[in-house]
Image (cartoon, rainbow over all chains, first blue to last red; front, top):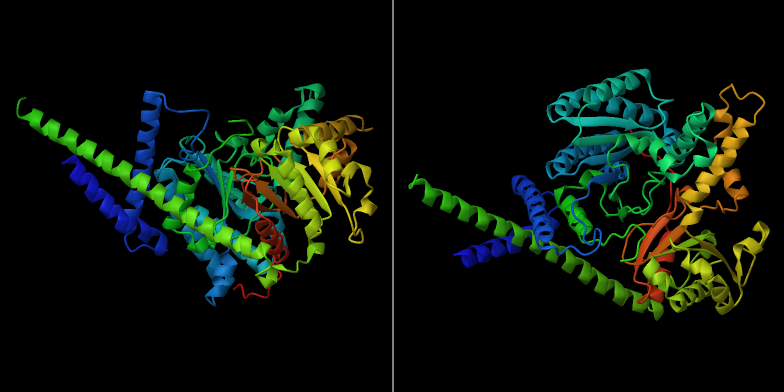
Length: 297
Length: 264
């Protein structure tokens, strides 16, 4: 009986799973959500069995589910251009995709998601586009506040904040304050963020502490800088997996310090098209990586 | 009580069957993804051989001037194979690359640098050249820089220490001089003082099983194109040419917008 059922499941998988990679927008999203959930279940089982029977060899020999996923949301403008749409429509499509992903990620047990929504260099874009993006961030924070509260998602916004509109700043403070007590799910939005600036501001904060006598100059080390980076707000400050969509293969000043041992995944898909199938593929790819953290295996 | 036992047994069996099915589906998903990578790997290998044999015209000429600084990141396991590293450097020299930064986290290549420089004709250490020597007019030779993890976070800590000392020594320490001392250009300068190169590589090739930059100096990574090349042991000249050719076709906006798209 067990064998028959196993054969049945295998045949079902033979038909359905490849479809996930052929059709970017599966017509049965409910099945796909279940597929994501079952992966989580299966990997949990796999972990439990290995721990019970002691078959784990070495540290992180086989990737599990990442605790922290960072995403560079690239390709909104090209997506709009391909369809003959306005850039603003591309950004709106990107924002909708973002919310879907956040929900999926948390559902399968990822603790922290970081999104590179706006870089310091993006201020160089046309004023109209920049103003539109700031307004869109404001609109999304307002509309999604109830969702974050209901699903206990902690929101942190990292970045410079010096050039942001006052109304957006006020909203960010409100959202951060309202969700600061939540622990299991953490969404980090990088707005006006620069990896170099992150390192500099960490050094500056340490300088302040030294000036105030809280630490000695001789005691300055890497761990101290780690603690002063903007990502220190997270339980998992270093991402396990970094995804940059649109096929560009660089990290563009995002998490320079934090990404030393981060698995880098560069799918050739524009962000608004990065659907459940692509996400499943990224996670499966991650699970096959052999992470070493600079050590010998 | 008795009537519940068969029900409990049944639900337990159903649970076991469900778990088994889920496990099979998960493993099958991994098989599908692995097969996909194997097939694309085969195609890449065939293409790479075709490129090496000169069968694909577009790779026969590369605008190498666009590649001013190349970084090669090696996993510590592959960094032990010095012969292969030398072969890679010879290929890069043949292609016309002028400056290469070789990185491995443990500094194994730094220990072998004399041997590597001896085995690659026309090569010289970056520290022995002036900046003016690394110019497009240099026809021959290749400049090599050996980098390890000590040039990453440790170097930034040392540079931060210098800036900190500078701030503490200012004539008005009570004023907040942080913004004047802790700027990108100041940190660049401090990194140079501790002996670090601050040039940003245009392209980074990663050899080894992992697809990360393995702790390459963070300060230098801002806009570097990162390409995973696979195993150093089975490296292919065609793949190397293809990666460099692809880079020369990349156009970066650096976060800004240069195209006349209608945004609203």
